[in-house]
Amino acid sequence: MIKQPPLLYTQAQRQLVSLAEPLGSETIPVEHAAGRCLNGNLTAKRSKPTADLSSMDGYALRDDDCDGPWRVVGKSAAGHPFERPIAKGEAVRISTGALMPDGAGAVLIQENAVRDGEKLSLCGEGEPTPRYIRRKGFDFQQGDHLLGRNTWLSPAHIALALSGGHASVIVGKRPSIAILDCGDELVRCPEDASIHQLPASNGPMLAAMASPFCKEVTRIGPIADHLDDLVKAFDGASDCDVIVTSGGASVGDHDLIRPALEKWGASIDFWRVSMKPGKPMLVARKGAQIILGLPGNPVSSYITAYLFMLPLLRALAGDRQPWPVERSHPLSHALPAAGERAEFLRAEILGDRVSAFAEQDSSALVSLSRANGLIIRDGNAQPAHAGDIVSVFHLQNGGIA
Ligand SMILES: Nc1nc2c(c(=O)[nH]1)N[C@H]1C(S)=C(S)[C@@H](COP(=O)(O)OP(=O)(O)OC[C@H]3O[C@@H](n4cnc5c(N)ncnc54)[C@H](O)[C@@H]3O)O[C@H]1N2
Ligand code: MOO
Image (tube, rainbow, N blue to C red; front, side, top):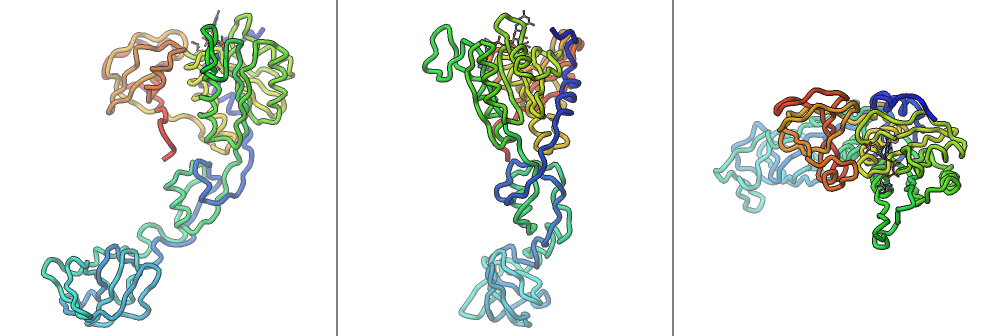
């Protein structure tokens, strides 16, 4: 029996993440790099744009020759530049994104032009202007810093890296993970669950949370509450970098995760964290493998995964700042004093204000699925009033963009 008192959640987070040795790096095509952690700085290999371009469809003119009429002597289309300098009295038909001819310093948009064969004149609505020129390197110049180490690459970053001339990037390797549902009462197919059983919802939920950060996610179980079955399941996961269990972490007769891990040969780093929900969480290791034992209650499982599993996976994938980001919001209503454990309240952020849901039972999924934030209450926090500023973790809803 472990006699340590429960750890503070911040201590437990640091202790867990300190066990994570980043898995090294690999070079991959930029177009496949969304959701990966950049391992190194990215500098522009080319400027954007590489030359002055027109931002509109119309005519390129000299900026000392803006009254007209002009003679249209050729065209500059995107990918097909006009090859010689433009002279006085000349205009070049130009399309959006096409290179400005040498000597051109203004664009007349076609809505403000009248064309008769090669003859071009103003229609009286507007003037040629340099405003419709995108200047060479205005977005970034060759040699500029584009992206910093530790950036989780988004679709916009992909466009930036490609536009900066990079075909490939160096990113952190991702871990493999095995996720085990544990409990006699669990059934894999929800349609097969009788009254005394319930669908094993934690495994797929945790897999969905983990998969953006993992190269491979293996789901195992549900596993019955028998020591030997659990040991066999751990054997089946022995190739993975991380093993995550849910259920069986507490103190009941059927809570066998700790004894099973010990029988399997793992050593327990810590068990129990002073947080609500999520208290019975444990961390163990076998060789280089890290095992996270999450509580079975679905909300406890989600919140411990958010606070522990995700930072661990980010750290293994090369992120040096893997922590969830706290933000400040005014409360829209009062909150009572907190208990001894730190509390994470499912909450809704509306505008700037945040309000906790009335239902905070650690098995209640409706309030979890409606929450877009978690209010953080320190252990023994004083009552809070409407308008008081509280710390909140934003929960991600939707994709990575
Ligand atoms: N005497 C005590 N009892 C409990 C304590 C305690 O300190 N003393 N801690 C409570 C707390 S806090 C939590 S949290 C739970 C967590 O216990 P376990 O991790 O052992 O979880 P189980 O008992 O196996 O399951 C709890 C609950 O969750 C359901 N469950 C389990 N796995 C899944 C899954 N994969 N998908 C969906 N639902 C799952 C399970 O059926 C139970 O209803 O212990 C308290 N007890
Ligand atoms: O920690 Mo338990 O997760 O309070 O229900």
